[in-house]
Image 1 (cartoon, helix red, strand yellow):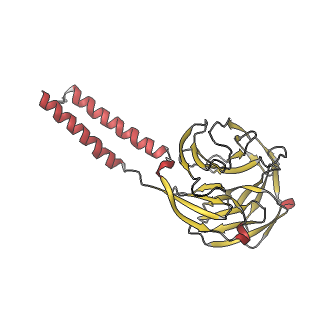
Image 2 (cartoon, rainbow, N blue to C red):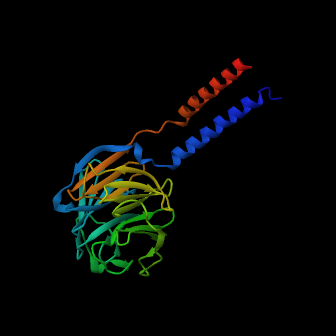
Image 3 (tube, rainbow, N blue to C red):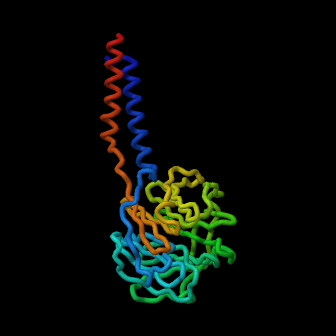
Length: 292
């Protein structure tokens, strides 16, 4: 027989509900408000001129950056040391970069809105005409394809078009067949002037979207709802690329060229929430005893 009063049982249930809800919310949301700049690394202008895109290679645990002049893709450690680079030939307006596994990358030309698949080889050369490619849209001005991100769990790609109009798309890209199924994910209404890059968050499926003109990093749901944001305008006005590592560290890159590392303040452990909520429950139980 349960000797506790209905009020006590209700309070216990409320504590459990709050505990589960708080822990679930903490694990689902990235919460950019917890992030702050912790390190800045200068990149060599010789191989990272006007750095415009960055991606995380989960196989090598290193970063790769791409300059918008289409000259090099460069490998960099998470502490800013250059590991090596690969020359690009025949490119001129590279703004998008993502890693897809097994040493392969996809890069995108903004105005052409074409994407190309290459296998990275340090000290090698990737020639545009020799690579498998897919056209994602018509040739436009300097308002086209700005960012691309690959989702490992589904094999889908996510892209952003800068503006006029802004666009967020997702779907499959088949480089062997030269085809794609990219379609609109949502109509952007994010309160920013442009879209400069996109990164899929593997833990939640949400997106990181960066706006260079507004200087803001956004966490966005797949329905286009802004969940959290971070103002980056005081740090750099030319940042265009963003990526995230397995441990949740965010890296951005700009035309300086620099890499910026953002880390998050720790989220209280569920045990901490439990102690806090149990304390609230104890206070309520004691108050009820006194009133009774």
